[in-house]
Every structure is written in structure tokens, then in C-alpha cells.
Length: 607
Image (cartoon, rainbow, N blue to C red; front, side, top):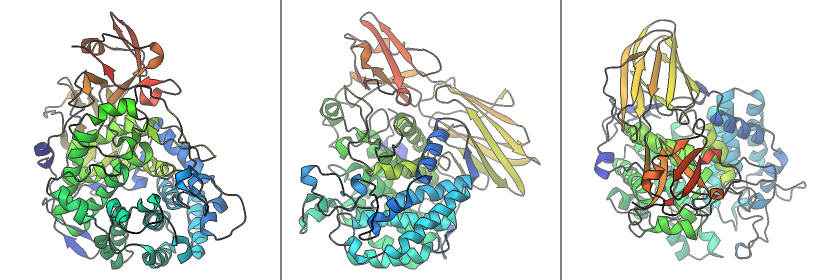
């Protein structure tokens, strides 16, 4: 994989600016630069392609969900049909006996509402807005202390409810959302700890069984800080500060100590977004440093070639060959919708603050090799959960119904558009090369950029600008670190003079006119990436950002040389590849193209 050195990441290029007004106070950022702006959900429209299809499928799925079923866990002793699985209210649940029904009562309600609110902001669909407001209205009278009593996940569930209510207010225009948020907060706070508790600290306190030590109070600050910035009140800023996990997590990370080892993977990457919000709201350089250091550890020490991380939902000690060991020990390689959602948020924050294009490289690797290949949700709550990188890998649903990944799936697909482009006063940044259209105001002129592409299956993308009057501004293109020397950028058919450097943005600044076209041709040389430093001959074949998985039905090719892999040939537009060697043939596919075929990610090679 493209390795990001600590020195290189921490000294990444930034964007010019000053302070930014948040709430009623100006924060002068530690890096001396205002973050890039995030576009609104409605400013970016995905065009026809796999990302649009995945978003549309999730939007339709949750729009059709039964509202009484969704609200039943909050309505005490309510009649009617249950959702099933983790979501139900089941006082007889016993995690030690694999009885999955009732593991996390009502846990994902807030995520479903959040996903719908974001979908409304993207589509303007009035039925979606009405459903969000009905769900908030239906939830409001159910708020009670009894819901949180003898409950495994009060902080986890409260966090999702905060996200739902601030999104309902911001994106679906719900006038009651903040009042409902305040009542929810008043109630939940009577059942939350006095500070963020690590899992070790939870285990040290009295608990009914081990599952009661898995709550995630350390992820709370992100949404609490966002609630404050959206106008919910200063109490949310104070609560955000209260629940920063400084003592056991952010302080060590800020000092360069790896505090991630043996911690739950998804929730601790998710917690890094709280560190980034602490930087954005408080101007805390310590928390920015913690997030930077953690990200560098994540991509250099914990990640597979796909960008996925956290096998068996854990972070492992670097330098031990743990990633290679997982290829025969586990099928639980990456908690996909949850992990992708956390990864997208973290890389989006970091890219906005640092301007480092390699954050976008990491984001797109996770996009094309994990979440975009996820199986769709089924009506019974069957959810794609783990990407499997085992030597005998396959795509399957999680055995439990309505697990946590059913909640993050609609959120991450709704975030595809806002992850694709950023802006400052002078420049629009193209982060993801996806079929899409973005619009913005440049001065007094409404501008648009439409991107047509089949990237990464094709090595080309084309962008057309639309604007009524000519305007001077920059268009910054992310040049991935893996890009070869023959990568070319042209404007209206003419090669640009600007230096195109892999691992950096190239900025095209000029007076743009209606109909101007930008074209990028990426040089995508095949390369191999070892699973870890201890196993240099266990490699994945990469083409651009895409990992190629060998289909096991073609058999195991012994005496496979690395040079054979590097001579792989595409059969069609990137949907299938063929490797021929003296020892036999090997067919490979991207993760998005795999259906029921068994596969393996890494191949044993000889020199």
C-alpha cells in the first residue's frame, strides 16, 4: 500500500486562510489555516454509477421501513410486530448463549433517521422529509429514564440519537428537533458516566456481564460539538469537552504513543472524529496531533491493501506479523459499513484541515475495495458486516439481524457526495473521481462542474465547467500517490504546464469559461503490496486504488512469481484480470465485482 511516513504526513501541505467563526467565537486554528469548506449535501449530485445505485437503494429501503417497528423499542409495552435481531427489546437476552435478539435495543434508530435526513438534503424528496419529522415526533413522547436503565449501551445509543436530531434539524428542517434533543440529553445524562470511560475502565467497575463494558462514551464529543456549532446551545460544547477521552487515548496519541493496540477498532477510529471536532471547535492542537498520529499508525501499521483494518474488530501490535496471521485465523477482516463510515469521516476532516491529498487516497482505497462491494440490506435485517480477506474468503451476511452496520450503511452512502469535493474562497478541490455534478457560487456567478468517468475501471476522467460569465478560480485535482509518471492533465485538449506530482493536488488556476473541459489520464501501473513487513512474499496485486482478488475456483497456482502478477491482463474494462504463468492461470476480480465466488486477497509469490 502507499505508505505515509510520519514526517511526510505531519508536514503535509496546507491551504491558506485564517480563523473561522464557529458559534459566537472565533477559533484561530493551530495550523494557521482555515479548513477547506465542505459542500452542502444538496450541492453535490451523484450521476449514474455504482455509488448512485448504492445510495438510491439505501434511500428507498429506509424510506419504506415500518415506523411502528422502528419506534417499538422506545414505546414501552407497545403491541405490534418487532424488527428482530439486535434491535428488539428482549429482557431475556444473554450474550453468553448466542441469543442475538435484543443485544442493543433500539441502537440504530438514530442512524436510520440521520441517513434519511441526509437523503432528503440530497434529493429534496418531500416524502423523506415527512418521514424524518414523523419519526422525531413519534420518538419525542417515548423519552424516559426506564429506557436507559439496566442497558448495555446508553452512551452509544444516545450518540446516535444526537446525530439523528441535529441532522433532522439541519437537513430536514424539523422545528422540534432541538427541543427533543434537549429532553433526550436531560434524560440520558442521568445514566451516563462522569467522563469518557475506556473499555478497561468499564471492566474495572461493577458490571452485570462483559457486554456491559462495551459502551462507547469516548465517541460522544463529535456529535455534541456539532450540535453546538449548529446552534443547539453551549451545553453541548461543555459536554463535548467533558467526554473527550484525553487521559487514556488522545494524550498518548498526541505524544506519539500507540494507544490503539488491543482496542476495539471501529469505535476508536470513530473516536478520532471527536478529536478533529475538538480541533475545529476549540482550536486544540493536541487533538489535531492525536488524530494525525493515529491516522499515520492506522494506514502504516494496521491496514490491509484494501484500506480495511481491524481484523476481529481489534488493533494488533505492529511488527508481529499479525495481519498475515489473520489470513488463516479469521474471516472477520474489516467491519465494513461501520469502518468505512468512520474512515470517511476521519479522512474528510483531515483533508479539510491539512490539505493532504493522501487522505483522499486512503478514502478512495476504502471506497473501492470495501464499502462499494457490500451486499445490500435485506428486509429481514440481514446486513453485510465483514469484508473477508481470509485465504478462503467469501461474501456473506452477518448471522445476526439489524447489527450496527445496518445503521452506518445509509449514512456512509449519503456522505459519498460531500466526500467528493471541497472548496475555499479561491479553489474547488476534486477529491474523488466519481460520476457527479457539483455547484457553487464564485463571486456572483453560479458555477457547475460535471464529472463523467468510469474511474477506476477506466484510467480517465473528464470534467466540464458551466458558468454564465467567465470567472477566475482554481480547480485542484488530487493526484494519487500511486500515479505513474505518464499521468497527464489537459484543459480543452491542451496538456497543462503545471507540474503533476503524485501524492499532491495540482491546482489549475485561470479564468474559466462556460464549456471549458478538464481531462485527466491516470498512469496506473500494476504493483504489488505485501501484507506486512514480516511477510514480503505474501502480496496483493493492485491496479490504481483497486485491489485484485484471485478467484479460488481457478485453483492455487504454485511457484507464482511476482513478475507473473505484474504481467496481468484485463479482460474487459477492469472487471476481470488474467495472470498466466508456467504454473497455471489465475483469474482476479475487484471486490465490487465479486458475488458468490470464493476468493483470496493475498498470493504467495517467489522472487
